[in-house]
Image (cartoon, rainbow, N blue to C red; front, top):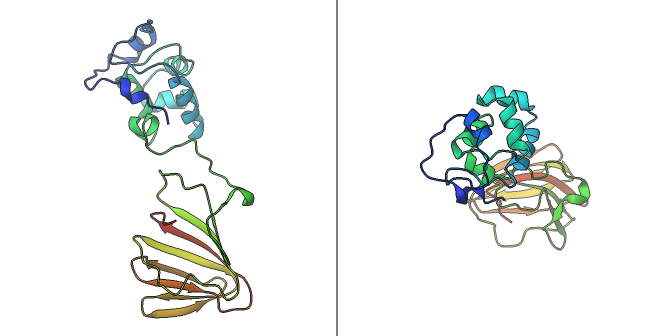
Length: 215
């Protein structure tokens, strides 16, 4: 993610977008964001949220012409002006240019895009590739007949849930044990000791989610 915030001043006062559209000299002052990639980043963000330049201008109170100039990297906006532009999105300045959520990450995944993180007779195919900014882990789980998560019960922070989409699975959570079939579901606090075991004669498939990511 771009590290543009390093050039920002701590005390910036917005002097208006009209001033910003004209002040694009070769030596930007400390209260201005480095011009490189700002326009490209703003344009990509606007398209991600499905906004036209006109709609963003309406939301932020910055003129359509100024937004166009920023996206073309023809002006170097002040931090305050850029914050005004970004007020049209439900995100902060730090999230856009710092180490926050990456809004340009993939949002759709084909079957062969899922990352295999399981082993042996248990397949755990993860949606996405474990980006550090994500707070949710979604798995397509497949348990071969007779497979289980081990003799030792699993215990970790967070919570998890899932829906059985095929076969059957025996799940133990604390002192409770149930055998679940297609359409059945579970939801529990992961700090409770738990174990999964396929006692059936066919593959069990589960779509699960846990937070925070465990694997």
